[in-house]
Image (tube, rainbow, N blue to C red; front, side, top):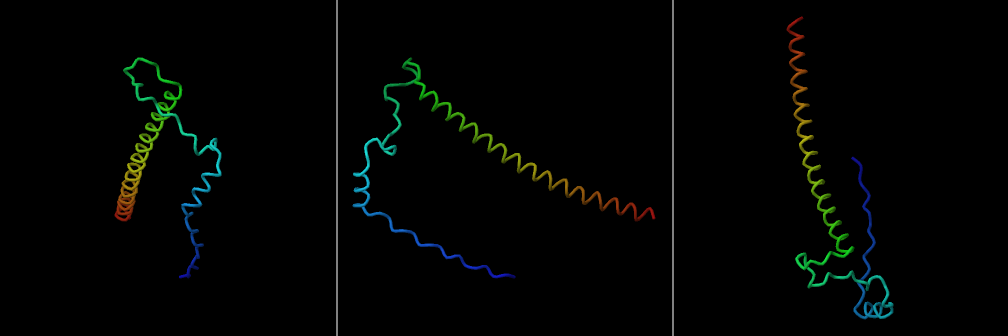
Length: 110
């Protein structure tokens, strides 16, 4: 058995102080991407209001449904994978039994 060498991990840096965070925020310009928030849907817009959804809302809805579809498919694939694994194990057990029975029949035939 071989001994594994211990890996020495570097220490984590200290988190920035409040003063450092504030100084960092003050030195950024207002157009920095971190400060650009996605537009929130207006509170008065609802499906029953009769106004058509904006292209951004349609895209957000499309991506939501696509994500839900992906998650559902992924769950189905995982379930199918588990079923296939169980069926494979069952087939391997049946193969072992069959090979043993064939060996017994050959032995009796001789």
